[in-house]
Amino acid sequence: MSQLPTLRQLQFLLALAEHGSFSRAAEAVFVTQPTLSAAIKELEANLGVILVERGARGAILTPAGEAVLTRARRVMTEAEDLVIAAQAAGEPLAGPFKLGVIPTIAPFLLPRVLPTMRRQFPKLELYLREDLTQRLYDALLERRLDAALVALPFEASMIETHVLGADEFLFCCEASHPLAAKPELNAADLAGEPLLLLEDGHCLRDHALAACSAGAVRSDFAATSLHTLVQMVKAGLGATLLPRMAVEAGLVDRMGLEVRPFDPPVIGREIGIAWRKGSARAEEARQLGDVIRSLLVPPQPVS
Image (cartoon, rainbow, N blue to C red):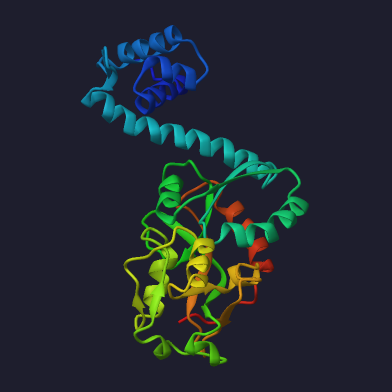
């Protein structure tokens, strides 16, 4: 029987596949290039196949190398989960935890929840990554994140989610806008209204379109952030929909803009926490979610 690969050999193969060069891969795993090269050769000898084509342009995995790589990722993930599960059993939410957050949540929710997390979990080392929803879900599946704060609904396979609360949409416009005179609106009031929205890729755009299908969308303008969006409203380019979370965090303060709620049923999005199915950190993600839920505005029905 051939000698089994070591975790270190598999780690080196993963680094080589990611960086495409022996020198860069060696640097990434903090060993010398000869050490990494020797380990890969030993792995090839043990398996009886060539895993890497070595050339002037770098290192490219052979078909056999690609097949081994897929299983190597799985083995390394299981090994990492073993360590995480053992540590969590001893003391949950201690040590590093990588949390992703979408841009329409991060600047408005994190200032409220981070101090509480630090008090409740003093040994937690929270690493944050702000990114769009799809990229956060990809990072969860690739084990580069432990959990992510996202807006729901969002369909993704192999991902579990836990709803934390609701975040309704508010109509934002200039003071001179005809709808500013109404204390409350309904979806029908948006018929033909040229709404400004975030650019494609932001789930808030999709949620707004689904909630207010009667509104017209300005295709000639799109913002990359909610802060840019309110500046566009202030410049007279149109009206928009904003999450209550952002408004209550002061997004439109001293902007001279009007904000109006909608009559029930409330339209908006749900805030949730997501993690990879089968993750050893699922229970810890739920615990973090429970802390965040306690700090959210009491949930209201979202249509």
